[in-house]
Image (cartoon, rainbow, N blue to C red; front, side, top):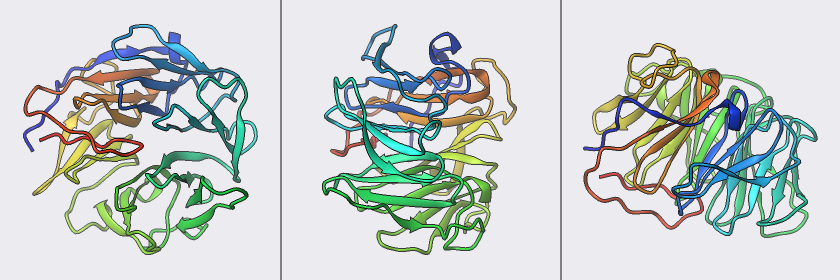
Length: 300
């Protein structure tokens, strides 16, 4: 619980590279950073320590909301701007492979350690799941009913999702201003933060949720322009703590997603500022990486 971050971020990438209104971001175990340019389609990658990116995917549609990079370098991309599908780009491939058809936008993608793919279906108010190790599987709804609503088995325009090593699901339930937890194989959720939670802490349009290795939540709160984390006693702000939108180094404006690198630095897609901001973690105790497709980090 001793980790903290520099309140002033540095601009890791601006609109000249990533276009306008970035959403998805991913950092792998080798600290390569992936960001999609939603204006013209390519996915860019910065290798650890590089200042200029390589283009790893060309030719995907514009307006892609989310993507996920596996440990072997395969990239799964929301292609809602063109075909309402999730496409797979194998490492070094020049063409994509259709993985899942869905109706609408996958605002969040995740692949768990069993190689099951999860999609938060924005307009359908559900989270879908589909194993990737079997052919001709159809996605199944594992959270939400298909209608927007605030009760325990419903979602309203879900965005970011996270699956822990026990296959429990965490959902940024954006329209309901809350974070929902669904135990493995459970269809009724529990509110961990926001409206209806046991601990009173109001959220304003959360769009991303990430879990560290100690089980603490990190939440991107887009309309309060900040990132908060859970603690043993509740919640506290770690970035953008004025709650005011802006373009200064200590401000965000409608942030959408976040990711950690292996030493705990935070990368944020700063949507309305058309940039990715990097916030350096103050050095403290060493951290360890969980062996999973999307590593959670141990911060303390």
